[in-house]
Image 1: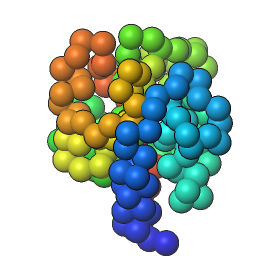
Image 2 (image 1 turned 60 degrees about the vertical axis):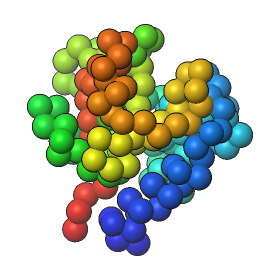
Image 3 (image 1 turned 45 degrees about the horizontal axis):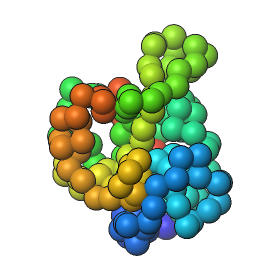
Image 4 (image 1 turned 90 degrees about the vertical axis):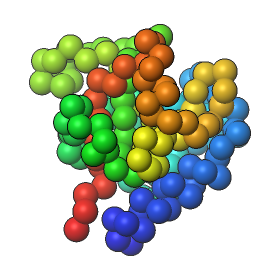
Length: 149
């Protein structure tokens, strides 16, 4: 499967999950309800990419290319956007000593468009610019796990 086909499959799978409920600490492997990181983990499992269960560990894994946060207009479909949120986690051994607090992850599905599992709303499609206008959601890291060939 090409990178483009994997991205297309991710986006289709993400759209298929819209309106599923949010459940904090959703059970790994469950497709009845998601939290943000179980949603991302599920999507990537479907294209044979294994990701850790938590957003913090997903962001901290060595795979993928870290993206320049000053160029969010260059984010592409399939990229993961990690945010500080009203809750977050930090580990000293990740991110080369940088103090990065992560509480949320979303999948880019198009220009300024994400699909994510959000507390109180479930799996939704939303403008990234709308989400980050909320002071509780600040982008702290973005990664491209699917490299173009």
